[in-house]
Image (cartoon, rainbow, N blue to C red; front, top):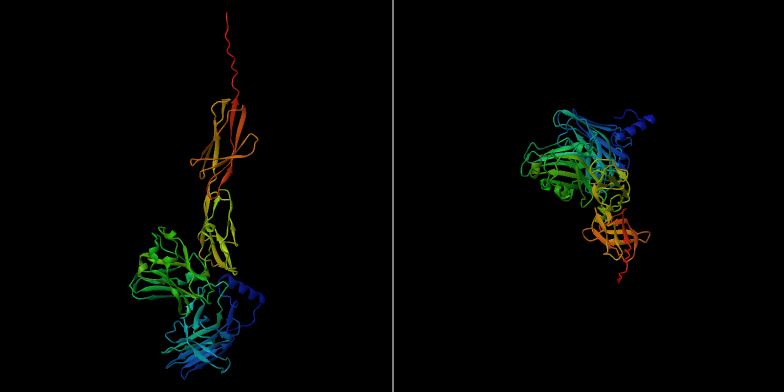
Amino acid sequence: MKTYRSHIPLLALLFTVMLMVFGIEVKGQGRTYATANRSGKTYSFPNFSSVTTPDDATDGDYTNYAILTAYSTVGVSTAWEQLIFASTVPANSTICIKLKQVTAALLGDELTVESYSGGVGGSPGTEGTLVTSTATPILTAPNGDQYILVTPVSSVNSIKVTLSSPIALGTNTIHIYYGYYEQPSTACSPALATSTSVTGITIGGNVNLPNNAIDNDLSTYSTLSVGLLGVAASIKQKVYFSSQSSANDAATVTFSVPPGLLTLGLFDGITLTAYNGPTQVGSPIAFSSILSLDLLFLGGGNRYTGSFVPSGIFDRIEISTSSLASVLGSLHLHEVQRTPAKPTFSSLSSQNPTICSGSSTTLSPVAPASDNELHWYTVASGGTATIGATYTTGNLTTTTTYYVATAKTGCTADSERVPMKVNVNPLPAATISGTTSVCQDATAPSITFTGSGGTAPYTFSYKIGTGSMQTVTSNASGIATVSISTSSTGTFTYSLISVEDSSATHCSQLQSGVATIIILQKPHTPPITSNTY
């Protein structure tokens, strides 16, 4: 019940900041709220029901609320309020009603929510025409807020909430804060609430701390304890969003399993299913199909992320385990999110480029949609993002893996991270040898170039004295020889300048070294004469 309407402006500002910092819902952006209402009650003495401050559910002050109370001794009393939108709510939209269940437990049909078209606010106003719709049970968000989500099969303009008294002696009370709906969202879309269910025969199967899967904290998790499940048994956790997805949004799940051997086959008993309201979108996706083969034989305990893009818009994601997953023991859900699809690359070589040691490269995925941005990381999980359309590495000397994810602009929820392996080829090295002295016209000596550290054959660049650059290519063993003519005398200095290998990147490196060939003039041979005595 609203007690005060006036607030000191500074306190109001501080309160808003606190809401944002501590993750409490801040309303208004992208939402259409109900702005009119009508209400009523039915009871006969000695039963009683009431609707207190009904305008507080539609006055734009999102901190106050209407109060519905229904009390009975014999028979049933009811109190209801109809929240009316100024414009038509499209068919299959998710309409969210924030409320608080004051009574410890509401049984069966003691709380009902219905959709209407043609409703008119006021007293008495007009109820309008009932439209078929489905409603969730009361859902509790991580911050304790409670919601009911309603999905009408055709367009409506109002939602009616009816509270009935207990069949036996007692009182039921709820608070209604407001009702709203959102168009498909291109803004940050954190999960609103979650629910769990266990079906069939199970021993020890349950879901612990379910809200940890939607608290925007990767260090916490909900636990789906598989236990012993019957053949038709399952354990499910469903995550709800307050708006429908954008086209090509992905269902993204970050999870871990207890330490132990991981193989993809162990995940065949876990499925992901997208829903738009109560309607299933496409077929369930086996968890194993969205995980990388790199998980094979990796130890458990680490966080992994998988995602898939449903075949249509969606506002709910369900994770279900069956008896096939019982060997895992339990599944930890760190975060269930709706994100843009993971980044893609135009080619495998652009995703996993190869460079020479000491060089850098610029990584360039396919440009994301205009309302999305790329987040770059140096680790597979955690870390601090660098935001940009491309990422330029430092000068690398070893093969290094980077990661990129897509996020809606200004949002923290990342898509599945895509690894980019920058392969670094070593720089080749070379030596020169063959220094010697020979006589003119002797057997020709050789200069030997030897390459190593790269991919043969090698191309050696060298000079003779101050002459022009020359090249010679090695054999498959990395050796090249240059035969030196001995027809002219003199000192000939061969200087090694650089070496280049034959890898796809043609890595090269400046080198040094000399070999000196000295061609000596042949000794003078005196003429042979004959002497007569």
